[in-house]
Image 1 (tube, helix red, strand yellow):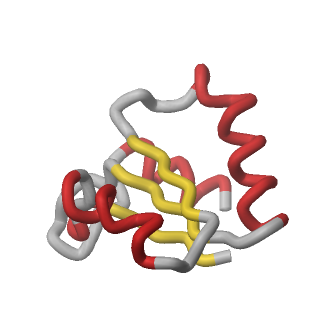
Image 2 (cartoon, rainbow, N blue to C red):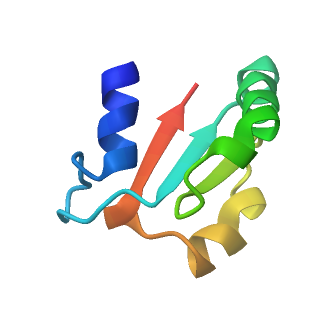
Amino acid sequence: MARFSERVRSGAWKGHTDKRIRNVINVGIGDSDLGPVMAYEALKHYSDRSMTFRFVSNVDGNDTANFIATEFSAGASIISLR
């Protein structure tokens, strides 16, 4: 996991369109959402500010529709399903 994370942060691991990953989307419900959100909030000041992190805690499409319509780039995103 550490090697994978470093490759994403450094730009060595690219999306399917050969673009650098800029968005990380975590989809989790209940405790599967809470842990990553708390870890991110505690450590966000040490993160790569050129990357965007989103946390989705509801599988209802309305919860994410605006984000997907305005900010989501499939070629530069990783989606983590928990």
